[in-house]
Length: 340
Image (cartoon, rainbow, N blue to C red; front, side, top):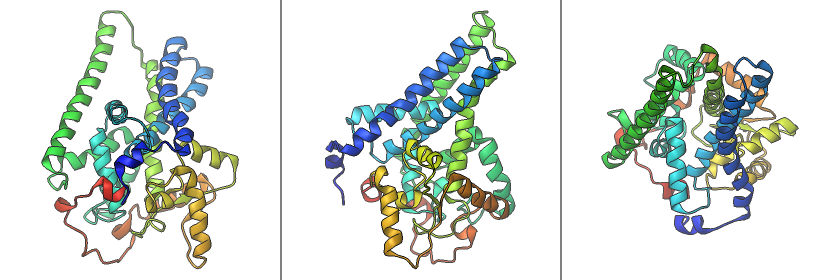
């Protein structure tokens, strides 16, 4: 088992490669969003065609930043890490404690009924009809679906999280409510007092974070939906391709597309995941892993699963014995065990 304190004190070369990306995307998203809103008209389509995809990708990569923080890859002081995580969670509407608890179970119980991150696709009680409807809701209305999926671990009666941690979650949810009610209230006050007149076309400024949320939902679905295995290398889609676009997109999102090795080795440097996948494939020539040469190829395979049967694990046809799993309400995990 890895000593967490010692690991966080190590400033490896990986940190320096990660650090610019970890810092860049929040800066690009926040400063770029303000610059666009302050200097360009919402009806300026030429500017919008540039700013919307740029900012959407920056907001999208903040999801990757949250993931790296949870995995302990932001080598900094505990105070900086905690404050950063709380701020990001407040802005995105998903408390850091909620993200941490759900994601730990995602790694511990991949594709099983205890995988809260993959609900309802992992839930054997969710009908095929419901999952077929929900998967499109999950993407098109991701700004609503995502908080529902993650918030279940706080508010569900089946939650395995101890009450003290759930109280922390609820306090963080209160902080989110205060922040967004204050933000929306300030906007209404500015409109009512004539300081700024909001028009319907101003909603275009909200497109980047909304698109980023939808793409993050699609990324999660593309990583898993349609896979039946509980094994990390077979129960995930891994994208490793030679093209410049594939390599660039993967690099700037912390190589999360190399998803199988990430699940098998959650503390492995993201820059080493591709090499590890190659080593595994060479060592097991008789095994066929779900590896795709491009994001488009992975998307096509996902689309087929979304139409036919949007499920994972049991819902995707796995018949492995699950009698060893704890009950929903007793499925406790620790970061030392599953991040180590």
